[in-house]
Image (cartoon, rainbow, N blue to C red):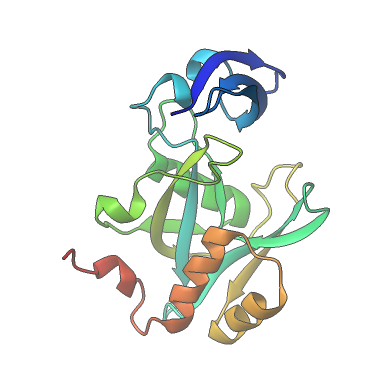
Amino acid sequence: MGKINKVNKQTTNPYLNLYDLDVVNKVGREGHYYVASRAKTEDDLKLSHAENNDPDGVAIYSLYGEKKDRVVLIRQFRYPLGGYVYELPAGLVDPGENYHTAAIRELKEETGLKLEPIVVDDIYQKPYYTSVGMTDECCGTVYGYASGEISKKYMEDSEEIEVVLADRKEVARILKEERVALLCAYMMMHFLHDEEPFAFLHAKEK
């Protein structure tokens, strides 16, 4: 098994930092591995706390309309891509904040809509890791129904977001033609094929 000999913090930013790890691989070869993390200090890195699975962020998969026949998406400008990508509404969880509470707050901030979360088994919503080849970030997922009117009133100046209430025809088009974040794509596939809203959340363990 590989070994980490030393952690060197490279940046000091409020939301994302780069860490340079001095590592030794399974055959004894020394090298460097770079990790992007929400952690503000070396002690906060998840590699320092194997039991730490606290969510850094939360994603919101919500349905809209009387018939619950539209999914709430955002089309957001992202600097790493130099353009727009379709995503689920999402955001960071504040220290000590329950991520379900964060989901309600974030949906309001990004879309102006009110979220009514539904209760689901922990296996579907607990924090999972997003891209372990480059970051230790993990995110929970909250499901629910959205209502109200779209508004940019609560949006931050740094956010460049278009809210999209997509029906199945539009979801199919987006999946075929647009750039889409991975978790968003999986949820859109469920929305496209499940006759009952959130049917996949009721799957029985075998």
